[in-house]
Length: 116
Length: 117
Image (cartoon, rainbow over all chains, first blue to last red; front, top):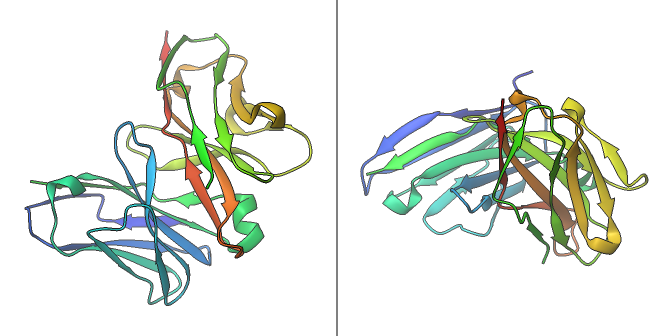
């Protein structure tokens, strides 16, 4: 059981380039999330999805887009990367509703992105 | 909106010493509370959670936490710290959003634990 898998694990981008981060989960979780982690700021929610075909904005959505075409996959896109997007990105998933609140999240191992 | 405060950014303890990491939350109803641990270069792993019932909860790796409603706290404790406990620890509160069944976790800023031999 792989849990939550993120690809790639590391990436260096030039300013203005685009890229997509892939998150895949095999636990049949309903909800999926993208967070960014920066020193001293904890984890901040970028976007989330409560089901296939649905997405919503979190705390820091600007500069990012997401898609959830299949239940098991949640993609995070950067259309025009900026140095301010240098961060570690974590994907997480959870059950829906009360089960999700009770069990919490399962996290991937992260993607370290540097924009130069 | 809910919020979480971890007052200590960095804590250093000696191996074998006891540990307490502080967490204070703000939420209008009964919260769902979690502690996660993040080892260097890794994702977050769930240590323990409080949902309801007994206010002292046991987790993995010998950790426990106590929910104190009167103090809005959920402090993490361990009687004897091991060198392998060096990591960053995050407290999180789960709450309903917009009257839906969606439960959103809000994380604290984290506490880095250093363990001296």
